[in-house]
Length: 368
Image 1 (cartoon, rainbow, N blue to C red):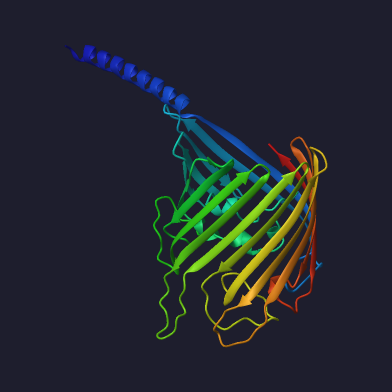
Image 2: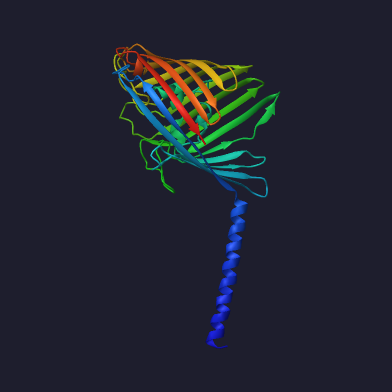
């Protein structure tokens, strides 16, 4: 065979191979699933401040942009999978990203970073028309319970099964590096203050009643001082109950957060921070929501957070309560919504000397 004929046949084989490869890629891509994009924007007008140093001095207009990409597909045996990536407001980083694999009979597995851990199903689970009360102050115990599980965790959710007419679902989670800090693709724990974390929750629904119980723990890897028991693992817990009758929903929740910080109790006239102050925190929320019609809803929430001085510190310090009252409404028109709240805070940051705060927010939302 001469050189010209050899090159001719080689070119033919290359064309056939490339054509076959292109066809197979198209077939696999079509079989793999689809990619969807969702998002929205909120324009807010806010007046007030919930800090311990100012009350109603600030006013501003803000914008918030959210874009999420979701890829999904299904295998021949009925197992489905999805990949979700959500960007930050600046579009330069991710607020969350996770992979879910759902089997037909054995439940689902979620592997996530910055989102998707089981605690999202249990924190601040009381009916609200607009925002959770933690939107005004981060010092709400229920909002912080188990949030250290968000870093490269694995969560298993059982199939929902019936027991005496009730529907029951279990959640179990594990994070090798329970620090709520983003670890890059393929990254390993950095060996910091905390080690691994575990979480577990159960949800029970019976008719119009829904109850959830959740607990999370993470290992403290600090070295204790000689002769002093000052290193303890962290434990968080929360439970809630919600009931709906017609257009009305009511809910109640209690939460507990002990970060394992041991030391001198905080003074009543000093600002305190969750997981930094020596002591533990308890919270309770009660809420009622009313759907006036399919477009308009209102709600009222009361939240009481209590700082408890660490037992055994040898210092007698009274507990400090921080209270939040929130009145909210929401009105929707297709992809557009108008929402608002007014929240009053007493003893912000658990500081008895701090001025009470009042914050009002009105938001215009557009979703796609």
